[in-house]
Image (cartoon, rainbow over all chains, first blue to last red):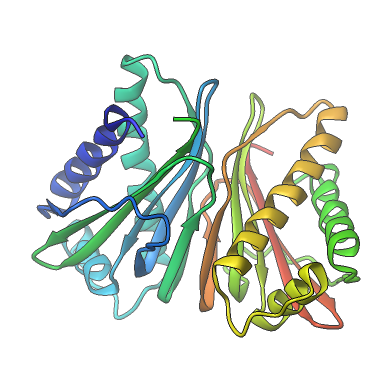
Length: 155
Length: 155
């Protein structure tokens, strides 16, 4: 997969969490192994469809980090993953994808975003079903880990 | 939400499971409450984007039913939710959405499908983040339960 296509998502995730939740992410080593999966407690997922491309994107948070982001964004820390947390995760997913979409549009890659979905459940995994390669990218922060997964058909 | 829009997904799910896995589904009562969520062990999710519509669709299976469908489709029953099961769930999600897409196209509703994603994890929940109404529809079978969730913006 073209790194030109992945970088806007990475930049956008880092920007969104720095701006919205004063949380600095440090990118780890990308993993392209197709049998690897990210494991976490709450995830935002979104589908993308364009004339040249079709794919899916997910962000998976550890519960601790998701709750700490709530604290930093809203000044309140729920005791567990509740509807407010899934709203926040859905909103972050939308913002990150929207930021990447704008940057990619400037490079001539157009796509539309579907509506986001949020999965909660202890240590769930997400498998993106595409023919093309898949990227899993771990990020660390002072409050826990987040994993970005992205894949596209035909790239 | 327009029932004209939901029915093709219901028909398609029933057809796919009857044809591919000789499993008859009985539809339960639809639920429109926005705070209700389906809970299950393995789910297929897909985003949809069209000129008039944007939304997301998921099918959530109990582990027992997913494993029994493997037995009926492929003659082999894995001991747990593995990569073969998530492949099958992704494929069913694609087929169900594809069937509904064809039927809706004939009625003048066009949309493109993103690539499917599959979530596994004991008793996870999925929240579809849209402004519009959301439908959760439970189905029962001789081998376990499946939940269909579908929602669209602007309908």
